[in-house]
Length: 362
Image 1 (tube, rainbow, N blue to C red):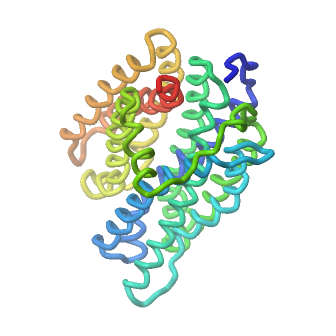
Image 2 (cartoon, rainbow, N blue to C red):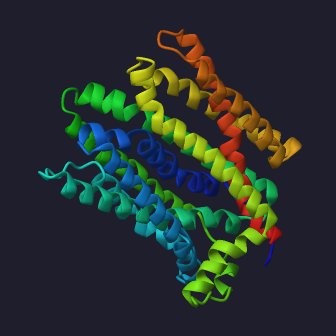
Image 3 (cartoon, rainbow, N blue to C red):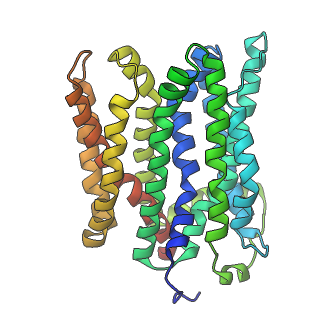
């Protein structure tokens, strides 16, 4: 594989970064608000709402490697990954909007089946787009530092999308535009954000040109179920860097998802703060500013070391949650949010900067 390619231009970096508007925004809304929507707006019992989440996550675990195999074996004039960005434009919109519809079923069982089907559909479409998107970075450039730059652009778009997705649904749609009509508010959340998440893939499709040399790679054959499980779930763990990156990803994003998933209830019922802006503005503000420093620090001391420094700060910030009480100073909340965002910036960006380097060690 020829490693001497022309450096990526600004359009390619921006186009690649735009692809994470969907990833950063959709996961933020789902993690922060979907459980709240299912329980408080759609009226599902917590047990059924949690079951829908669990089944969808298990489905994800199966479909991710399957989509990886499909994407690797795709051969088109557009390349191996880009066709899925194009196909994803209408599907991203439809699958996200479907999550927030109240179908009007009289029984909880029928409503559960609908929301489970909608969530599984969303997860499937997300996988269809997200797996090729994560794969294409390693094929756009072989340069170690250029991949860090791609991660930087990606995280900027991801977190700009994340801050809007974290604040707008409850504070703007439910709290202002459609005050007093939550079902209608969340329906329009689905429609509006579905468009915001789908349309940027036009830019990603046009700007990200794959290395044609990858098209000449032999197709992977699908053998028995046993061989598929072995090759996709077991063999990768023989790669030591892969094991480390998986642990970084698992624990880092598990902590992030846990915080986001409980944020609405924690702020509203534990601290008595109805507005998401009080905490989330400093979190995402600190995150966006710190991405620049994380990128510069990684060039100076390395990606691994930057992750460790950021992770340490993040752990300290998370520990401060134990000392939060109702009526506490807003300045304390801002300080916590800022520290949380600064730590998260390095954790997020370094995980995605390291991912494309792992196959090079294999």
